[in-house]
Length: 117
Image (tube, rainbow, N blue to C red; front, side, top):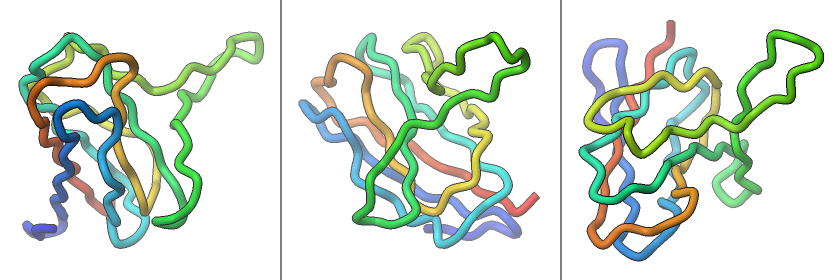
């Protein structure tokens, strides 16, 4: 973890030939979380999983629906979303990332930028 003013930065790596990263302890609940997606080395989508404890069950984050008849969908970042930061609208202490289908041939390091507001 690195602290830069009111922002804390964390890193997590998904190793080559692995589907999930290890969990990151964000040290508490944050009002804003940005996921830094590196230049991806394969055409696989990524998704966040959160838990209330390091050894707990990690679950996917779902988008809020705007219409009662709309089925919620899991937050999923397409493989074309690369070399950028994306907002994650949730508040979680423990978080990890997963690949939807394929694993990569090279390790990928992702960053989380967390702020209070």
